Length: 146
Image (cartoon, rainbow, N blue to C red; front, side, top):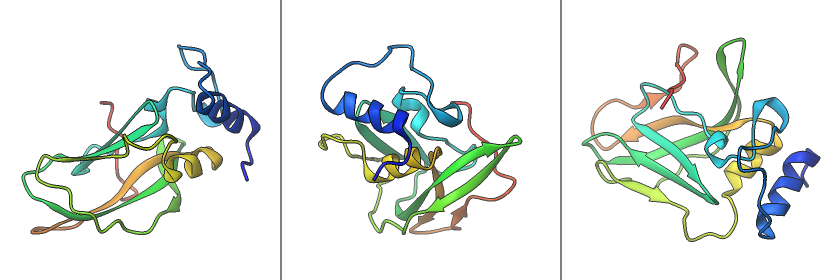
C-alpha cells in the first residue's frame, strides 16, 4: 500500500501513460517526477545508478567484475546521507565496465517504489568485487554530482 498520495498518484498516472510536468513536479522531500531524481550516487562507489523512464540501470565503473551489490533508500539530512532502508544483497555479477538494466519491465523496480514510499532515493550501499576490497557506504560518503 502506498503511503504518500502524491507519489502514488504520479506513479499511477505514468503507469497509465499520462505525461507529468516535463520539468518535474515537486513531491515530498525534494523528490520530483523526474526519474533521474529517484537515485543518489556516491563519489567513491564502484557502481553507478541511473534511472531513465521506467528502468533502472546499475553500471560497474571498475575493470574488475562485481560479484554482488546491495542497494538501499537514503535521504539527505543536514548535508549528510542518512540510510533509511537496506535491501538484501543481489548476487548478480556485473561484468567489468558492464551494466545491468531493468529496461524490459513495464513498471519501476520495487526498490525505487519502496524508496519513493519512504520519501527517499535509491543509493548504492555495498559493492563486492571478485578480487579486491569490498566497498561500503560510510558516514563520510559524499554525494556524486554527476
